[in-house]
Image (cartoon, rainbow, N blue to C red; front, side, top):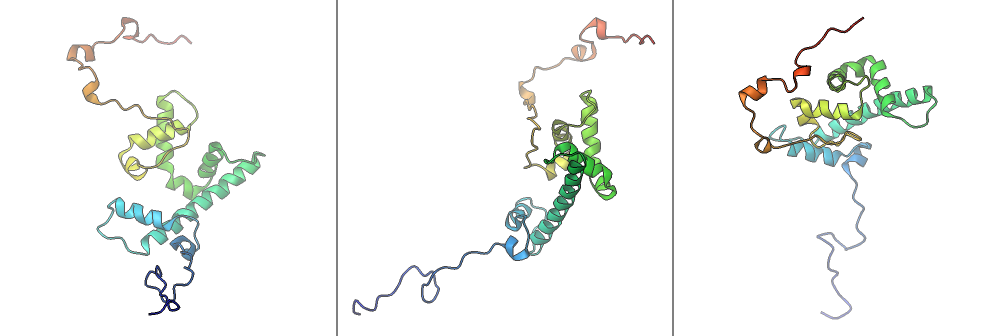
Length: 187
């Protein structure tokens, strides 16, 4: 073997060893913006089924992209109606409330968020109330376990072992005698 006939190495099993083609993602192949590979990974990691077909993450990504586009279009219309250039959480809420089908789809989430707002003596639903609603509901908590809700804050999570033990007499007795009984409001 002389020096003029050298074999190129590093072709990775390809013939000729020419320039490598750029990888094409499944999202690009499907014509989607949402990440098909990541959704497929979540489907596998979440153990929703023993096996996940190759078309399932593509279909789910397409459905999620459609829902996001629908909500954002309606929220953009609500923002434009209010003479704003930026979509706020209020515009998203208006979009969902004014659309019948989206209202039915997300009614449970908004109801739970409304309950959290009422429990905190507030009239408006804030991102914090959405966070409380999602984290306190078992099914929504599992569905949105890895999701970060913007401006939701953090949930205080104190291990029950660290809390002082409550006795039965302390649990049944009111903390202050002035708050033990309610007086009727004067009209």
